[in-house]
Image 1 (cartoon, rainbow, N blue to C red):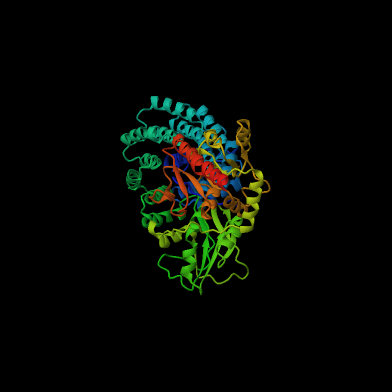
Image 2: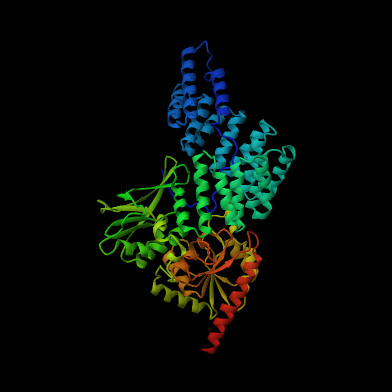
Length: 603
């Protein structure tokens, strides 16, 4: 069991595009044939006929259990063989496949490693462990294993396709495109390769250019639902949710893989939200809890799970914060409504990220706030909260976002009040004093990236170099609000002569209550949607947000309904940053530098 940080589902979750199923009928048949031919390590049929026959029966039974979707039983059978002969490589391979299908991915990886030591030249095994390394995010290792497979079995298009996917996930787009172009030249009728090329181009941020590749994949294979789904995500990125929804609906027809159905359901929900259909969107969004999803979270249950039809008056309701930290803040927009619904005879208990406890407790003094924790157990994520011993009686529990199904069924249901979180007034006064001592200029807080900047997430953030003209706006003191390691960007800013000042005595990642106060002491906070901008906007601090074309949190509007006072600077398209950054620079000059300095002179 290991403790995890808050998991977060991407706005456009990706289907697993790694080709090759370790438990495919073809693969299981090949392993079955090898089992019949080899028996056990170092044993001849003459010397140990009974023992070998027993091991073969166990492994054949294990393979049947895998094929029947009973991986736990297959694990038992494979373990029985290894107790007889721990150096039987095929038994380790079967155990690895069984564990992988049971969701015990780390244990499966260990079993694959044991098998690989005994069967180093088995290309299928090398490909299987490469695929698992890829799924686990061990991209460097996956690359080495795929290259090793291709050395053993040159010219294998599916594994070469997987290698191109690794290059894509490492942001090595040029190498991925070169490899896929070579593969397509040799295999022009393989829809898989056209789809992969589209995914590379799309991840790079060129959604418009990716569409012809998805179109060709669908032309070659009209039933290729992954290509249709990927085209939908590209269309979402281009701000075309109507056509995206059509593609998702078509992709879902006939799909039988539960994980793919749930994944596409999440994107379908985001697309419905982008179209302003909140009632359907938040109902569909419940797909995020489908146990078929590897990232799905289950919760420690107290009482019964809440349903939208439940009467909350007089009830004790436990609410779990969910997804990432920014999502916990955004979804908290409705806590005031929930408190009103339970009434004076009821009670709300909130379980949230520990760093948010002081801010939420001050903002909602009538509720009880605890810290939740998330652990991985047997390959699954579970969220817990300690309510004390004995715990108080709880009638109902729910994830926070699920409450939108009742309290935010339309845009009209969002309150127009500019803030729902309350900052520490004394700390605001402190920071105003610190900022005043720094310089008399207006203060603009800036952040530019997320902690997670891997794969296609990079395309959603403006490259730091493009911030230079904004940070050079005269008459403004820019304040660094970027949490995490930003030493490289700060050094580049200093070398360019840009005045980006880091406030002393605050941990911008951990001290979130103080971050809220600092944001409220600034003249404006600027950045993409991330933890800090969510906090600033929730507290009603002037917040300017760089908005991506597929920002589902706009709910079909020109603003951010959860943060009605926030000001949006929409990006024209992924990678098309210049227009939004130019508008941001102009607004800073006209509305902050000029206005604030003019009022100071007049005073």
